[in-house]
Length: 559
View 1: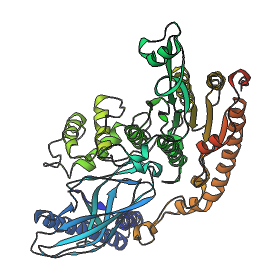
View 2: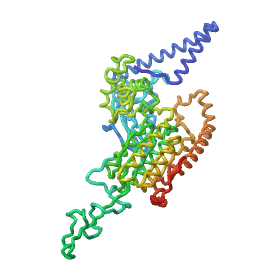
View 3: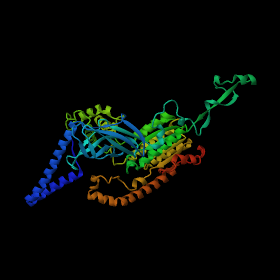
View 4: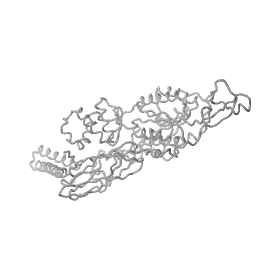
């Protein structure tokens, strides 16, 4: 059974050890006795907690979700409410002084009631309110219950037998959150602008004289009989825009508070562009890159394409891959053990410490109980990938790594744009959302963008928006939580200097943005910024004058 000391308990134990050490150095039996008494009191409190929790577990104290479904889908920036049942099968009432959700740090979870009592043989309904500030697949996978046997000293995590998954989608793609039934959606009916081209269509363009190579099936026999010469029917077809959305999901773009990081707004902007063009009947493709090309979805239209793009935006920015995660294999194994032990029938008692191969096998066998089905993330070894996949399936997040891969990011972007420039049909619009590259790759990028512009494509670039990430508050704290009020002096001092640090970072960001704008403008790119609540860059591009014809297009300048 795992017991974790609360912060006051840890501080009390440290103080007792320090007092005892001082007493030994000062050769003072009174001080040593006082410190030893406090240590004994903490040990007794731990023993009381063990007995209390052992009785609760033996009696069948459990927590279950009220709903049968395992995954709920919602939109970013919203709040949902789900219910859990706390059941007590003991003959005595069970009291708890605090109930805390164990969930993804990308969710904001509150419980009501946070403290209470479950009658003997009774049930207590707990309302779980979940705020959804970040796009992705996240999990609510347990509760931490603090029993009254040792008030405020120890807490015992009890994990739900049926973990709950929450898929958070970008708000602009709400129409694609649930699959349509009963026929094609009116939302996806073709509309908007379309260019008319000769080809195999259904609309008659003209009747003209037969030319060598015209198919036999196009001969207009009645018109031929009237005119006395061979005539053919010429049809026309509609060709709508082919739009590419190229999204940068580099780990450094996750810097900032949850829901206000630059990548949060870039994903919203990408979703808005995709939703608008799919709603018009255009063909939309998506390419996602970071230190490598993470995925590519070829241009298509319709509801199925919207759902493909939605799933890609839910998963492509995750940081569980070994090259994007701040966790090594041992760190991942620790998280797997903490989550898997309460779910395993034997509590992992037969898995020896350090036996990661057996742990990976046990974790892989437990994936059928997970709310999500995902492919294995990138790992250093197959075992590492298996452990990371377990975390992904249960919606357990990994912090992004702190080092930047900007050089590799530029090469990945160059690879994507080069492929787009070669593919047919040619793109009408190319929207790039991400940071501007620098270094030697800029010159190569200029040649590729020039090739796109000469082919008649409009290239736009939305730079990240850093201001919300540099605006206080940088952390969300609940003042009702006693533990959060106990803060070390170095953290308090850091908070006092945080505004100055934010101002310095903001100044550097502004300088870097202006430099990026100048570089991209020289390449013939229409530059904009992602700003929440403003008109998206895609709408600005459509409202702007059309690009010059290919023969008059300016050659890209080298940066």
